[in-house]
Amino acid sequence: MPPTKSVDYQQCPDDHQRADEESSSFCRNSKNNQQHHPMSFCILWSPIPVITWIFPFIGHMGIANSRGVAYDFAGPYMIGEYKSGRRMAFGPVTRVLCVDDIVNYGGAEVWDKAIYDANDVYRGRVHNLFCDNCHSHVGNALNRLDGLQIFGFKKFNMVNLCLILFVRGRFVSVGGFLSQFIPFAVLLILYLLLIK
Image (cartoon, rainbow, N blue to C red; front, side, top):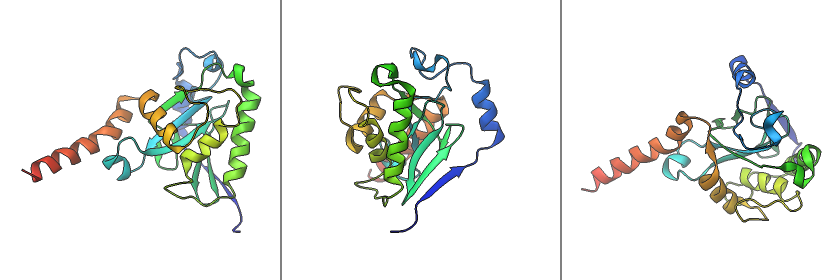
């Protein structure tokens, strides 16, 4: 088995400054995030060039710990760690889904341990786009939290996480919305013009 790797992607100072300057949380109603980083206790999503252009519901997924540090299964034997919580392997985070009331599922320590345990598992796995990918990594972490239920689901996998984020995920900005849907709209219009 190849050696395991942990990647720590350094962020631009601007990312850290924006994170420090942000006054509101993406989880405005969450008791968790009143004293934490805006990305704390969140499932994160970013578009994957070309794939998201064709299928806007498919993208890259990660998860943020209680301090807002983002983790993703970035490739074979590789877990990315992003200190600002605003970027992942494919660029800026554009959508988030915060898990409210994490105290009901064991609190910050249990949340963080679930993420770190999933990270350890996926540092030993080969990335497979179709069956063991970034969504599976997030699902592995969430499945370690007893009693967690999101959008009616109690067990998480790549399919239901894709659905949950597409339906319930909040855009972090207008730019995030545009980066997910404008390329698809342009390709759809071009296709419709070409088939006439």
